[in-house]
Length: 255
Image 1 (cartoon, rainbow, N blue to C red):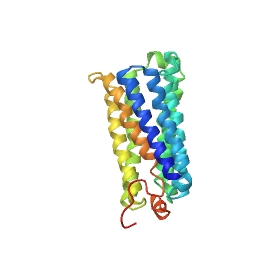
Image 2: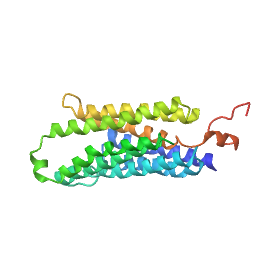
Image 3: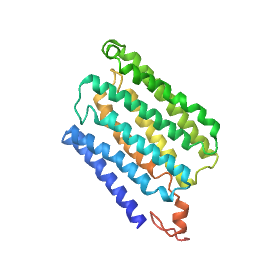
Image 4: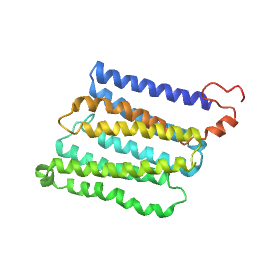
């Protein structure tokens, strides 16, 4: 049953990706495309929840599930508002900053996922939140929104984004090298991280006028969706599955 469920989830992923590609590039119905993109994030959370009981350990599974839930909340503010739900500029801006705060919390959870048994490393958590929380309170000031330096704000956001991402990247690489994760999980984590970094590069490039902003805005989710899908599967205990006779691909002759 678990094998069938996993392949059903993968089929739904493929259908959703095919759907938003069609509505984004062919039929050009952006609102429908944005809804389907958001559904892939919800599906990632559902996948992590489904595999939680079979995670390599409860700590890792719980951290992943919590981060996935926060990712859903983040994408409500960063993706749906202004794209699916039409709001005025000031409201959209406030929702964006709120989304950045949620993103800061999400990155903190991911960072702690890769710090099992290292409570002292929790001291770094406040630094993940200083910039987004500051931006949130500044955004409540209408004068700042109307007359503030938008490019300077962008630089602050990108600087914070890079800081948080680098901390997670370094943590993942260290934990994989230390053998914290089994081979299959390590491969899924590194693939997810690599694809996510490529997606992040497109996020940065779309914010600069000398690049084709519309093009990079469209292709971001071609990287973001698979990275989240791989991440959702990264905590499952595949060794235990093999012991139970569950093989997701062709069963090895020696098994």
